[in-house]
Image (cartoon, rainbow, N blue to C red):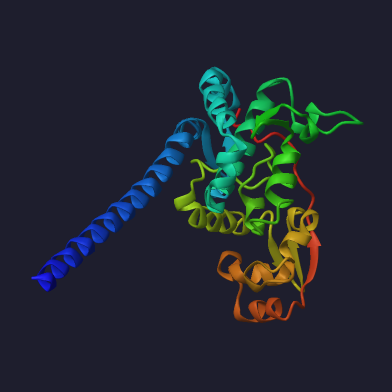
Length: 283
């Protein structure tokens, strides 16, 4: 009898443990789904604005921005920026790094548009918003993560300075409102698509033969590679130089076998092209 009671007790105990375990697993899965859905909802307003006011140009390698259209919907843009400002530093720190990085790239791009709108249409370049002694990227006007920040604080402090992300492809995702910049993407960045989005942005920029090309024994690249050379030499996927980073995307540059071999040996003479700071406006 005691044996039967013990057996029954053990079975009940095992069933309870199984039920509790299943409940905890289900709760964890639901929490992850909720978190991802919540992030998509956070950025849906930005995607809607981008879909309306971004136009592919230069055979799709770049995009032009309808700042007049953004101006007409500045209240919608501000509503999105307000949502970003509501995110606390504690909540941000608890996110996985993909979610953090997507958030920061979107924040940089959206507040850059907002900065342009403060003077649009009376400017020809984002540099017009600065002066001889002050940079537009140092203006502290971004209420984010409990502080008032500048665009430089987001890019160089939170994204690059944190050393948490170590992904030079961000330079093809953040947009400085200039023709020389990589395309402002037609959708918001999100954690679940971030890897694909960063890869596409990198290939999109490198395939632009007006900004990156090989001629003879020289490889001509955008000045982005000069300004942020340390990021391209920091070991991303085993690459320790600009040429080895470029080597990850030989198809984008449409290199032949000999050029690919030269790039692999890092025998090209690297030269940097002038940067076009004119506003990337569609009108």
